[in-house]
Structures are given as C-alpha cells and as structure tokens.
Image (cartoon, rainbow, N blue to C red):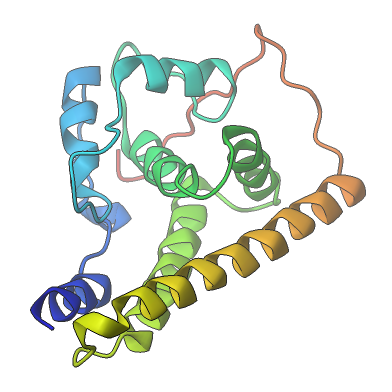
Length: 188
C-alpha cells in the first residue's frame, strides 16, 4: 500500500536537526514558531506551537528564558523535546522527565539533546521496521490496533517509571520567580 510505504519511509528517514545544524544566531519568537514544525514529523496541520505555549513553558520552568528576546540552540533543543513528548505525555509528566534529565551532573543541553535524538531515532526506526509495506487495506484496522496497543503498553511503562523516578528523586517545586537561565554553548 503506497501510503504505508510513505509512512515507513518518513519514519525511517525524517529526523530533527542535529545540534550543530541549528542556527548559530539567536532567533526571535516568530522565527522559532516558524522553525519548529520542521523538527518533527507531521501529517496534518494539527496543533502547532504558539508564542503563548512557549511563554507557558518558560513560566512552568520547562524552558529557559530567552536572552534579550532571542532564542538559541538550547531553546530549539528543549522545544523539540517538549513538542515530541507532549504528544504522548501530559505537560506535567513531560516537565518531570525534562527536569530529571537536566538534573544529571555534567550533562549540558547539547549532550541531553544528542541523547534525546538517539532515543527518538531508535523509536522511529523500530516502528518503521514493524510496518509491512504490502499490507492490504483490510489489514489496516489490525495494524492500527497493534500500534495503539503498543503505545498503550509503552505509556503505562513510562508513567510507572516516572512515578518511580519521582519517588526516588523528588523534584523541587518550581517557583514563579525562579526560572532557569539558558546555558550558552561553546558554538554560540
């Protein structure tokens, strides 16, 4: 089936930009908003990133503040992760996961983003490999059910792991006044 072959191809090939491929100059909010749809696979218009969403992520402590109204590689990396994770997790759970990653000693934004990209690559490849291009139309409901149930199982496991992580390493409540400062990369 042509559509499944195209889906498989996109899952196998399309990836977010690497850290070094991000713009090396600060971007304004409108540039960030227009840049981000290129970072993840989309099949329809769906919900797109808005400036209000970016501001809320900053207020919630998920995203560092802009530097003089400019956003850098670190912001693009965080936003890519946030936009992917919020497709399957609540904003609260995505925030907890990001906070757990940023609390790892000696891990900067570039290293965390590289890890995120490797994990995303593995997940997309695994799903692409599970798709048979010669699937018939009558088999589409069965394929959709299998994918949905795998998502369900993965989400259950993810939620439990997040609970265990929270039990072992309670994250401090973020105050409105205390927000993260955007760490600069050597390349900026």
